[in-house]
Image (cartoon, rainbow, N blue to C red):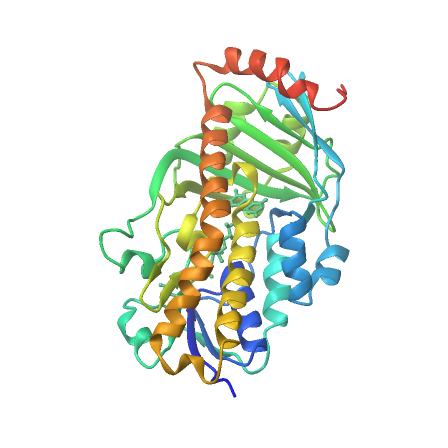
Length: 358
Ligand SMILES: Cc1cc2nc3c(=O)[nH]c(=O)nc-3n(C[C@H](O)[C@H](O)[C@H](O)COP(=O)(O)OP(=O)(O)OC[C@H]3O[C@@H](n4cnc5c(N)ncnc54)[C@H](O)[C@@H]3O)c2cc1C
């Protein structure tokens, strides 16, 4: 007879929601705490690849996610004058609205999960009486910052991200790399176009002004970008910086970090939510494996710690690999001085990956 754990999860984003569903389904007592419990107002697209889709299947929501997603086959990587650098297969990714994904996961929370809406300023009370505390509280994680010098604050990359949606049909599926900027266009099922852009840090506090700055920076290069930006509105635009977390071992005693709290990465390879979902599954499996090792295995805190170490060891390579590769891609995409050299190199190498199209 195994003993259910008392588990607190701070953060009801993708990683916290997935962990709550999986651990509660396994019979643990789960409390999920978030200051919002809200679906994002602007549902920009997330690319979800097959490993993350298999986690969604385990969560019982893949079918619903699929019906609300676009599934393009290829996209193009282009220079600022529109030349195709590479035709990139989409790798069976689903393009899903972040709001829809969060809403679906919220709806899938088992009734046994206790939800508490509040902003947490001190994690010590969360550890009291809990066998396990999960920090799924995003890139600026309080749980991580409370963990001592080895769990550092996130760092900025001096880049501003603007992203949004428009009702237009997407004129193409592409990412365009200019001199010190990038602009992406994808479909978004049920909405029209999802777009995203990176420019050197520039935030005014007014989305209207930020959009105007973006139009000045990337406008006039490609007609498709101008068309998307002409349809963009401040109300349907999000503006923020890019912050990432250096390498951390995500386990301290009975505390574990998941998703962005553990390894926030640059958005350029679209793997933050994918790895967050895989983290949640890995943790749930590690806890379950420990539980299967005999009677009442969690009577000792050592049992919990063993499962956390097992989970962390399993996720270290993929999570840190995606983090490093995403940061490298951000640097290459955003280079200004080496943009000409970059485009020639990519034409010579990536261009051979697949058929070119105009
Ligand atoms: C422009 C952009 C594009 C992206 N595209 C993709 C993509 O295509 N594919 C992909 O896989 N990933 C993508 N990502 C990354 C992805 O969005 C994140 O990795 C993912 O959302 C992280 O989920 P999370 O649950 O770890 O954290 P979050 O979603 O940040 O959730 C953290 C939660 O914790 C709560 N919280 C935090 N602190 C407190 C507190 N003190 N008290 C109470 N509540 C608190 C917050 O309210 C929030 O709900 C993209 C990111 C960006 C910026």
